[in-house]
Length: 333
Ligand code: TYM
Image (cartoon, rainbow, N blue to C red; front, side):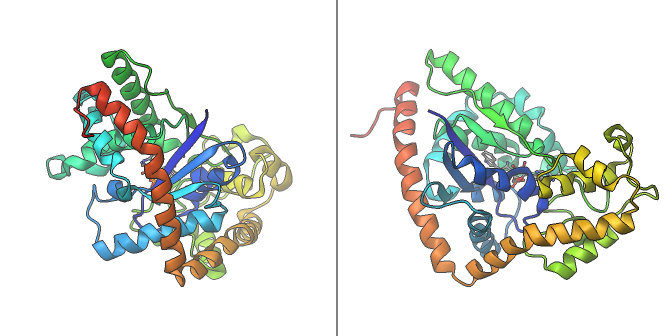
């Protein structure tokens, strides 16, 4: 059976990249798969989080799923820390994954920066917990943005090594689902950096809760180049900022990037940016409104998370029991 698992870190500033690269895709997949969507609060604390902010941001991720169109009856929405199988399986995977594998992870290098000695052990072991998230449900498909590809390759390596070491077929080899016209949305201030929750500049990203004025202002200030939009895709190759805005437009409008160029070739950014603003407000605005409504009703979000945690626990428990038995842990009866 095919099962989807994906997660978003509750670290605040949910943005257009999270939406176009991941959350929007979560919605459509519900028609064909059993879907499990998680607010990965244990991943979040690999770097410092204020506890009150973490609580609020966990609800915010759940609210974003709901507002985008994830149906909590068909799909499971829950917080990672409520299902202890994630932590337990992650420990076993800490003993399967090799140091050499983790040393190659580019996200750790980026996040730890120069001061690597001072990074938390959790930040280093982060991909093992991610493998545990997915494999605790024997999920087969994982919708993510492009930046998570390397972590999913590691998940496959862990599954493969576990199966080989113990002579089993316990874990599936997960398939990344990276699709759409905006799998890597770039910063509005610098086309060489990806749009990120932790960028110090608020102008680098459009967030779920930005209103029309802020979206318009951020796009007005978005970095571009002096040339009009070209007719052919190849002509965007050395124009990262232009390519980014065209990709965002295409994704929001459900068009290909070539179709966007067919419509706007020859147009200056003074024409294209207002069109993109209208589109972003039209598509993104209602989600922000719904999130505001949900924020005012934390009881509802909490009840969705509680119900999701119970259903997720019930799915993960037999997998964890199977794994413990395979590893040779005595099962308490
Ligand atoms: P996170 O919280 O950084 O991002 C959530 C999702 O958004 C995607 N994304 C982007 N897509 C396009 N353009 C961007 N600029 C952009 N920035 C972020 C991410 O690829 C991701 O799909 N490690 C994961 C969370 C995680 C997870 C998992 C995901 C934990 N366990 C298990 C899948 C399965 C992360 O930090 O995502």
